Length: 249
Ligand SMILES: Nc1ncnc2c1ncn2[C@@H]1O[C@H](COP(=O)(O)OP(=O)(O)O)[C@@H](O)[C@H]1O
Ligand SMILES: [Mg+2]
Image 1 (cartoon, rainbow, N blue to C red):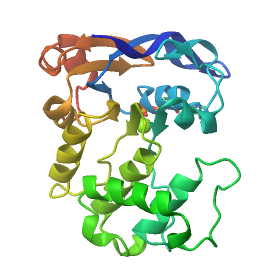
Image 2 (tube, protein in one colour):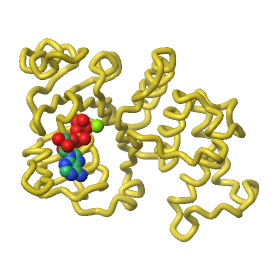
Image 3 (tube, rainbow, N blue to C red):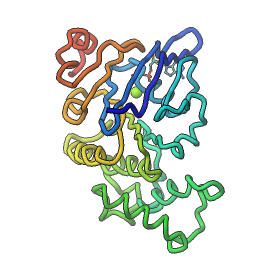
């Protein structure tokens, strides 16, 4: 299986504090790869380095063999790598359609965040939005304001926003965070479905969800990789059990 996303000795420092130390990650094409670890393990920091949200201190990020370590965050979606945010980043006073439309326009240089084009003027955008909507459970909520969606639906929409750039690799930071237990199955269905089209790197706190959807898992603790393997292998690894001691596995 070919490697689509890779890090080599990725290190991120904040002053004297080392949030990520020498992380080597290899994500195989067409898989869902989980990055898990207890709170403060360095998951979001690692994710931010992959997405270009923060600069890495040393090491490399390779996308399909191309070194993107210093590529600006806004250029990464065009290179095939898109991200979602752990904290909601939607425009709550706009409709589902408008949020997806803006995400699509943001990809076209010079057209980003133009509110005043009527939807019918941008045929290809409307088509792209409808294609993404058809893949999510939000097809019936096209004109609903984001503020009127349930929290779970908002999280699904965030994945939809990331999908607007047709990523080959999709980075998701805790897509179920804050979701009620009833909403989680729709996210699991969406992720399993998306796997047919793109590789997914899933940052998660919840080991149960990861066990259900991931093909491979990397476990971080204290900014370092402490275990790697199938969900079954890592959840039976003593080092992982100890790392999660006192937390819900
Ligand atoms: N901007 C920052 N400045 C200083 N320390 C940070 C910053 N961002 C994260 N950290 C520290 O890095 C560590 C890992 O944080 P984070 O990557 O958010 O962990 P996780 O997502 O696994 O909970 C924490 O100790 C956190 O306080
Ligand atoms: Mg985090």
